[in-house]
Length: 450
Image (cartoon, rainbow, N blue to C red; front, side, top):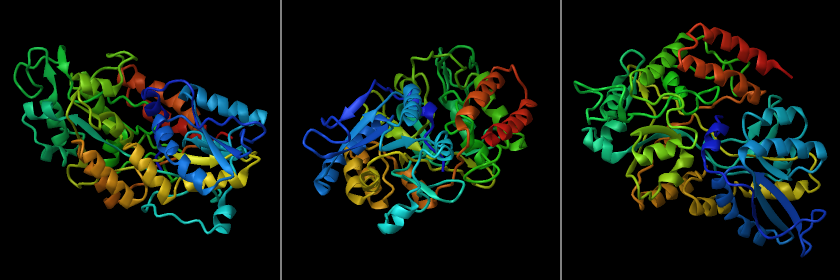
């Protein structure tokens, strides 16, 4: 499964540490004698969603109380690793596909397979939103929601460019001429004289509004950049799934994709690296009119739901111009029990409660960015968001048509550190296509590291 990327999460406004419920723990007990279940995550959307589940859980389990703590992404995994070592880690914690395979190999995550069987665990999640298994086939965690990427676009700019919402719902792409996606990007790009990118006299060096956000990859599998484009051509971010041994960057379909996406920046249709500075998020770029369209995740529904600054539309990812193939990788918030927890049974109760219909309904009601794996609950989210003026049925279509399994990389953090800077060099023409074969070999070496 594709996981919500850490780079995407860094882009969300994160603020310090948040703790929900007023109970302080002393030896695992609250002031009123209840067993405290410590649960950590980094995502403010999940704090809101799971916070809405706590009252129902505590009512159903009167001997327990849940303390939710959230830490900034840059601090989260450092603190988690330190607390593993100190023997003081949280009972239940969120982890990403970049890190949890390593935690499993370090025996920090509890194998919950036997607990699931003993308790006859079932849930009503849609096909493809599955528990988390390790390379050994054992079950180590649960996926408590799902996420995917789509196009978010400024509907007013779309209308001015003469593009309809119906056209956005059926974007095609190819690396030769860009397909209808390329046509839309050009039409949405406007220079400082008001000339569109598909009109005579367009000045690519003086842009008022870019047609699409920067497409330079910020993670090894291009979750919000190249993966859907290369995936439409049949490329996949791994040789085997869900745990690849290498990433096939040397595949010609990958280099063709990267060449095309880089050309968008070269030709003035997309920003260049660093153009807006580190303090301007892609969400701000859309709401301020700096860009007309962007690829972002379902977690941004909360950002644009009922937004007063801009009228936002949502469209599905591109299809191949000839085959109509589309790649939609599903991700989700992944939750695990610490192997060293002194309250494993209590932790199990909370972990499984997060996937229950009661929690899923409460979480979805509290935060529309929480995409429930229960189809009926997600349908209510679509209606809830539509009532505020935004149509997210593109995500409903994903769920109905089926979701593709993504890749989880052993030593994912090492891949991030090694691969992304080279992508940036490529984007700035400091490296050519020959670097992709080197990156594929490097990915194999990094993944193989123990």
